[in-house]
Amino acid sequence: MMQTKPVSIDVTKELSDFIIPLGQGEFQQLEQNIIEEGCRDPLIVWENGNKNILVDGHNRYKICKKHGVAFKTKKMSFRDVDEVKAWMVNNQLGRRNLNPDQLSYYRGVKYINIRKAKGGFDNVKSKGQNNSTAEKLSGKYNVSESTIKIDAKFAEGLLAIARSNPVLKNKILSGEVIVKKADIQIFAQHANPEKLTIRNEADLYNKAKKLREDILDEVESKLNGFERERIEKARKVLEEKEPVMGNQEDRLQKIKGMIISAINKAITSKDVDAIKELKKLIDRLENELF
Image (cartoon, rainbow, N blue to C red; front, side, top):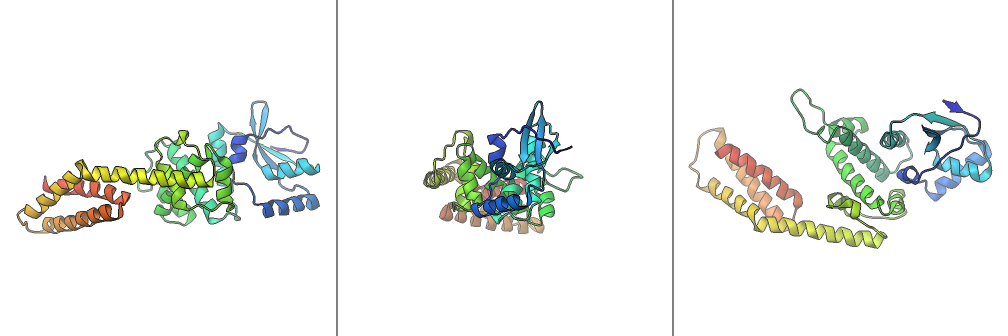
């Protein structure tokens, strides 16, 4: 419902921090346009009880209040704040002025929200169901499934940072602060993201480095313990097993080569993904042999 008469609007920090702010140049251009042409697009508000919470148009609202420019509002109904955020993400993804990191972030947030809504099981393909969340989103946004999953890690890392420093998160996404994506994605693996505190860019770098070292130490520890013994046992079985005829021999040789390759990669490069791959290969080997 469109409103033309003045409406009392509530601006919440949670929603204003959720959307990436405009850069200084973009804000100045929008301000000039509104001064010259007025506020043409209505502000979107969430009619929640006796409050009208601003959902879309935070920059326009700020400019209109500053210069006394009239504006229209459009009221929308939502079940809760999660549904509001889902709408905000879809709205942002429909715009064309997003940079690559912003697109990646919003795609990742959308992926996270869908999985959360479905209980986290939507990515498991069951009989008669061929499309995972990543597959659906990859088709919708014309990127690969792996890109969608990388986007999710990027978004998870940024959301972890934003819990203590939403301003830094927005500066990263606006390009004002340059941080390597790997240093952001690593926070997706943080054991207690709700307890994570990031003071500034330097603190982010140092904590990302420490977290990466902790993860690699854990990987090495597993290699030196149970996992390494299991891998060596599997290799020994492969080397001592009597040759068999047909496709099983080919499969065993292929798995053997993959195990050796994964071991070398895990030890020399301290590659976390190589450890995960080893576990899958050992399971495949056990299925073949026992």
